[in-house]
Amino acid sequence: MLNTQVTANVPDLVTQYIARQPIFNAETGVYAYELLYRDSINNVFPVGTTDGQATGRLFFNALMLIGIDKLTANQYAFINLSSDALLEDFPKLLQPNSAVIEIVERADNIEEVTRRVRALKKEGYIFALDDYDGDEKWEPLLSLVDYIKLEVEEPIIKTNMLLKKLKRRFPDVKIIVERIETHEQFMILKNASCDYFQGFFFARPEMLSYHNVEPSKLAVFDLLRCTSRPDLNFDEVHQRVAKDVGLTARILKLVNARSKKPDFVISSISQAVIYLGENTIRQFVRVLALSELGVDKPSELTKLGLIRAQFMLLMLEPGGKEMAERGYLVGLMSVLDAILNMGLDVIAKEFCLGDDLSSALLNFNGMLGATLQLARAVEEDNWPLAIKLLETIRPASEIDIVYNAMFAARQYGDDVLASIIEQA
Image (cartoon, rainbow, N blue to C red; front, side):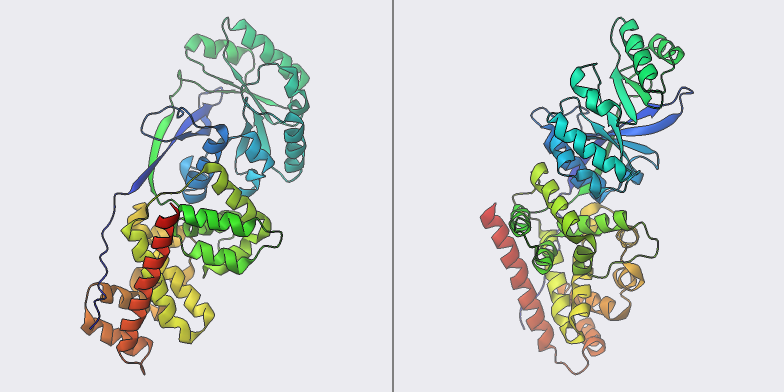
């Protein structure tokens, strides 16, 4: 008998961080949250990180994987975007009206940014100009944004004068003043008809942490290569995404965020890739490139997911390509509970897996569930159960087919991970 036991050691989980700072109305009720990139428990913007990197990592890790609604407790969200991110159409990875896009004070290429903002506004996207300082370079954007953010200056009369000037010129634009540190500053600005308020006087940024799985560098590079060609090959994209748990999780969440249909379900990775379409896939990959994500060495848990996925694909191939792809997705998703520290029931709901895939993951129901249970029985060296399950899945087959499928799946997992390590 071949040694087919798989060790499912759970690695140290990758912890990601994000901060959120509330924005208050004049009655000191929470109006929105500004989401801020962090790379550690230290509640400060990391030194040496560019606006582009921060934007990419915020989008790729937090917004795509966790979701805006959860990060802001269903309140409005304000998100900083670099010039590059705006010009690369990052906002299109979000639904219009789902967040306010902040144009940061370090933005350059103002003429190009203005053209892009004007086009995106026609599609329903909402913008704020961050840390407005009165510089003439911002003039083209002032009539396009819905919010203008100011920082408190001393003496505060300077802030008041700028606020009133903006109110006269743009009566429909909402003014937010940041860095308010005292009750006196708040009352003066409130009496000057400031709309919204933000600063340490109300609340410091609150740290949130969550578990995450990052994509391998090889997967990122492969996706960059295949999306750089003029004609996108969807099958090629699907093959690359299918080899990486981190990419799969985000692709599914992106589909979920963009569909906004309660009855929409995903049954395979290829379906998700095709649903997103060429433009969104290219934008998704540009987020990867800009954020410079990727880990040097994959975990044993990622390997386990690849092995289960390939084993299920091989065992279900006689049922056709669609059934085999559904099995691959179930196998890959079956390790996300340990990776993300999230219950499988939550994962099934969050990733729009539908009833049959969900019941396979949660209760081993149906052909997909039985095949997942078979994979786990082999991992645990429970051959009496494996033989019984094989009679349900492929009743005319001998147990050798299970040995061979698991051997091939383990080789597949080894090959994928070896290629990642070589490229790291």
